[in-house]
Image (cartoon, rainbow over all chains, first blue to last red; front, side):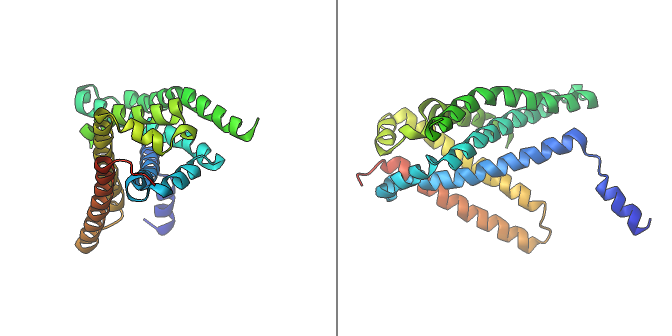
Length: 134
Length: 104
């Protein structure tokens, strides 16, 4: 096999739904972890450096952080729903494994995550608009 | 990962729902934290969340980075670095949870 054919095969990797849910699962997980590390440190200032806590919270009250928080909530919800999907399908429903069902489950996961996220996004988005005076 | 993940669904979602959606960051300050931590139950909740979320998250990061490492030396370095990071964060969090809010 020549180089061109090898490269074309790599680019044409056909992961479809499974690959997309894998990527989204990793990205949301890493994003939540990044926030978690920062959040443990800022909350521990209530004991170590209490005078700094107001500054940390002040950062969370800025508009860019409030918008980021809306995406953080989506990440937490999606990662949870998708993790539950993997756990349930792989631990308890292995016998019913069927490719069509697996592919559909990826889309259902996204739908459930968005439906759970929208009310939270609405409340949090309203807070952002209030802060902007709109 | 699966069992800690299933446990984190109620813990993390509950935390996000209460603090970010129902209470909102504008009402959170030192007084709010000390009021919340006055209840031993909330401290226990936060302790569970802290321990399981950090273990789950840092183990997840380990899995992701492991996909890009191949030599034993690199893998050992990764494991030790993440173990150290995990220890620092868990100990800082537990110290705050046990020590509580101090007056600035």
